[in-house]
Amino acid sequence: MRFEIVTIFPEFFAGFLENGVLRRALAEGLVEVGVHDLRASTHDRHRTVDDRPFGGGEGMVLKPEPLAEALGSLGIGLKAEGREAGTRVILLSAQGRRFNQAMAREMARLERVVFICGRYEGVDERINELYCDMELSIGDYVLSGGELAAAVVVDAAMRLVPGVLGNEASSEFESFGVADAEIETDVEGVPRSQHGAGGLLDYPHYTRPAEFGGLRTPEVLLNGDHREIRRWRREQQLRKTLANRPDLLEGAALSKEDRKLLEAIREEPV
Ligand code: SAM
Image (cartoon, rainbow, N blue to C red; front, side, top):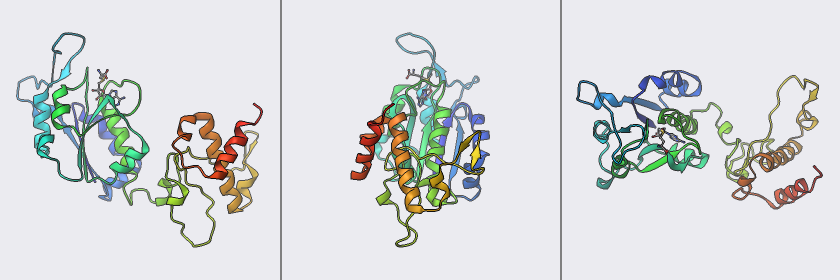
């Protein structure tokens, strides 16, 4: 899996590439990241990448020619000429489709993803029309550049590439994860203490000491009964989602038992 990032601030990615899970994945050759300086695709003395907007208005716009040349040097041609299977070209933009975990899962199955980082007022729209397979936003707010957005998307996708997380299960049992039924059990018949999110938020986690700041870890987590722990965790997933992201409940994979539990939680006195 290879990510290519086209940017006017290649140095932005130095720290990002040198830490944590991504650094290990790069070292083990599980993922590759190429950072490409857009100014290397300019030919004037000032290495100009931007110009004033047609029609007037504030700010500057990233010019199309350097971007087209940068993409060409990566072997990326016009969209109309067809794209290699497994390759996508993505324009980071506040006007894009909103990124989510399902998209990260899809992306982790691709071979090559090329990101274009906008700056100023954005990128000349013809680059989007001619080269980009998708406009992608990381949320409903405006950043000053696409670099932070590219880093967010690369981080979310690369950790789902098989082998990147030491323990595969840690990407299965987490917020927005798949439903329990889609997760294989290790040992036939042995109950798992974890519960697949099925589109809900994760349950709360605790570690030693069992008591901290006057708060005790819920007793159920200390008693070793996997069935009970699983049930408690599911309830917590439902509670958290209802409290913080009720919008997720609509698309979530909920069992009959989940629905009953939700109803009971909703009816609790506040
Ligand atoms: N004029 C643009 C608009 O109103 O939609 C905002 C441009 S923004 C200041 C500069 C660049 O930051 C964009 O071209 C894009 O690459 C990036 N950007 C800003 N917000 C983003 C977001 N929510 N998601 C992804 N990229 C974003």
